[in-house]
Length: 111
Image (cartoon, rainbow, N blue to C red):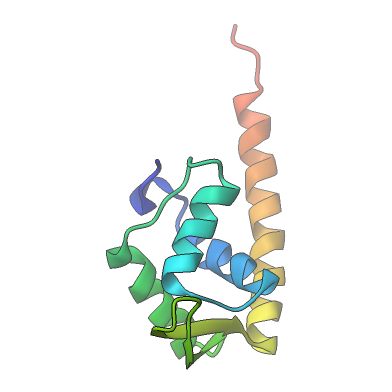
């Protein structure tokens, strides 16, 4: 699995925002969903996930509230805010631009 330093700067924030655009969830579920959707290629440690969630909350892109999880334990559930949805759109557009440029370079034929 890739570790966060292997990810392009800022990618973890975009991935978290995208996952939360699907539905509100707690930190553990965000981590599991990231692994599941990426077919176990991407993973994130608690030491990277929770500071990222805190930063996103500080920017007003997500909000957190205490709720009971499926196993009746209290857990912080995170959800995307309208400001977070706008940020996701900006980050997605930038990702598409940068990844297309990188793909173009990788596809160059060698001499």
